[in-house]
Structures are given as structure tokens and as C-alpha cells.
Length: 484
Image 1 (cartoon, one colour):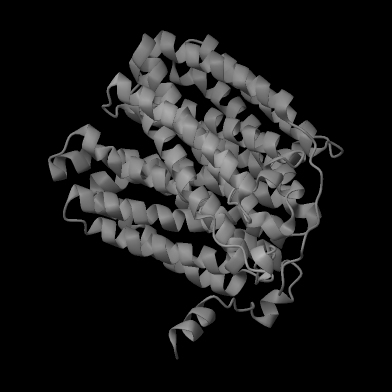
Image 2: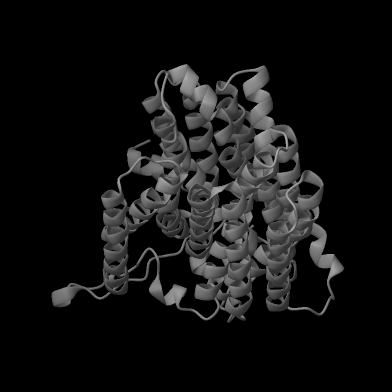
């Protein structure tokens, strides 16, 4: 078998077994498979901070060096989400999604055996490639693999899987580091990845690749296939990397002020250049026409805000609680209420709302609840008992907001570009996550745990109110059914 035939074979998606494909509830098996990747990604994101002290001792490295274990992952992930979404629409979302499990599992295995800190950082960068392959396709696989009537519920279940991974990460990481070793924080991913490969092979439906539309050739040569938008990818990578490095100074990355200013300027210049490039490209990575679709641009902004509101209290909560004398264990348990309420609301919370409410109304109601919870968190005395209710309210509101918002975005995205749309949703989520972490640490650094935390929480409540105003109805576009 020659190389071309081998590649073609690897990129050919296999159908599900007939017994599974013919079952009327088979789409929920596909949703469960996607939830496995969502759970794994968020578990890995929340567990890594627990191993920083152990990594510092093992490799005899300072915090600034150890922080690159998390930073390298985030930089690669954000930079690759949209390009991999572009690629997935061409070669098949199922293929790329299953490949993501393989890359993630192998790099996790290598990370546990890393002999130096920088080899570990390299493994984390490869791990981010696998995570991007899964995350760029997760929303698209759910949105295009379930009936229209079940889309919001399916996206809610996927969001709940993310919340569950986020909630279990700190406790699982603490147990593994304390009773085993830091290596097991990475090795625990391997069996989950193997199970994900098998489940994806048998339970995910085949997806159709988006055939690139021919563009007229110059000088009468006939049509030609549009090439990969390499300049767009490089500009996107540069802009997001500069922005995230600048934001990371708030969480401890040692950079002088002039370097931060330069990075912010570079991010702005590269973003402008990216916008110009995407308007010229035959098949742009970020698809300006898609971003400008009614409901998509505002939906991406709300997705960023939603994860900003979710992650900022997760970082800020333990700092405020331990600063008020609450034990670390109790603080961790209380803060877990936020993602736990998020997971509950994302799965069953909509059942408590009036049946006639639209997704726009659900978004606005959820954002309003989140704003109320954050204001209560800022106003009430800082104790484990006092902040439990505000965190539950905020988490529940976000669990209503984000699935409904994602459903609005994916309804407005044409089916043939759904992986690109899903990749942009996840890129907005990742940027919101990074911004939430940076904002919380910056507030504490500038004004202390008490007053700084209160100021940040009030600002977050105002941002939640802005999400109410930003929510817009989506304009449905054509959808292509997934093949069996």
C-alpha cells in the first residue's frame, strides 16, 4: 500500500454498526462520546495547578519556569482551535476527533515519563494539539448529530461534562499527588483516551468533509482548489500568543512593563493584519462572513463572557476564603459548588423554566442570575457558609446561559462549516478562561484579597449584565444531516 492510499484509508470515516446506527436514540451515544472529550479537557485544565509545587520540587525549578507547563498548553490550544476546525470541515470531524484522543493519550503518557521540565513543557504542547482536535469538533459533532429539537439539551449535557471535569480536577489532582505521584496526573488520561478512541470509532456517525469551493484561476487556467490559509494561521497564532503572554503577567509570569506594552501592541497590530488577510483569503480560517452572520458575533462574545464569569470566581474564591481564615480543604469544597451548579443547570436546569421560553430568553435570564450571584458574593461576609449560596446561584445561571448561547450560535452556522463555528466557540471559551484567571489574580495583586476581590466581583456582575444586552436571536442557516 503506497503512502497516498494509506492516507486515504486513514481519512476514510467508517460507519457505525447497523444495530447502533438504526437505533432511534443513537444520537445520545454520540453525545456521550463527545462528553468524554469535554470531561477530559476540563479535568486536565483544572488538575494541572495542583501539581505545580510537586513539579517545582521534582525539577528544582521556580514558579515562573513551572508556569510554562500550563502556559504552553493554553498558547497552543487557543492558536490551533480555528485552524483545526477549518481542517476538520475538509477531512471529516469524526476522523479528527478520534485522532485527538490518540494524540492526547500518547502525549500524556510521555509527560509522565518526562526527564526534564522542558521535555514536560513540550509534551504539554503536543497534548494541546490533541485537545484542540477534540475541542474544535465537540460542539459541531453535537449540534449536527442530534435532531434540532434536542440540540439545546445535548449542548447542555456537553457543558455539564465540562463542569464535572472542572469540579473533579482539584480534588482528583490533590489525591493523586498526595497518595501516588505527580506523574499519575498525566497517566490517568491514558485509559480515558483509549476508551474515547474505541467509543468514537463505533458510536460517532460519519461526517461529511466540506469540499473546498473552486476559485477562478488567473490568466484563464481554469478553477483551482483554495489552499490552506497559512498566513491567516500564522497571524492568528501570533496575535493570540502575544495577548495570552501579556495576560499571564497578571498570574505571575515575570515580564517587565515595556515587554507587556510591546506584547499588547503586537497583538493589536497582528489582529488588524489578520482581519485584512481573512477578507482576502479564498478559504479563510476565521471566515469573516461567518463571524458577521447575525447572532454569531454576539454569541461568540457571550461565550467569552460566560467562561470569564465561570473561571474568575474559581481562581478568586479560594484566595478570598483562605484570606479570611477558611481552611484550604474547606475553600476548595465550597468553590466546587460553582461548577457543580453549572453542571446541574446545564443538564436539567431548563426543565424548571417555562416551556415556551426561547433560547434568547434563557440566555438573558441565566446571565441575570449570574450577575445576582456575583453581587451577593461581593456583598456578603467572607465565610464558607455565607458564600455557598451566591456560588450556587452564579453557577446555576451560567449553566442556563452557555448551552442556550451555544445553541444559538450553531443554529446560525451553515452545516458545512460547523467545525469552524465550533472551533471559534471553543476559542472564545479559552480566551475567556485565560482572561478570567488573569483578571482575578490582577485584582488581588493590585488591591489585596479582600478589597481587590470585591472590586473584581462587582466588575464581573457588570459584565454579566452586558451579556444580557449582547444576546441576539440567531438566523438559522441550512444544515446537512450526518450520514450513518
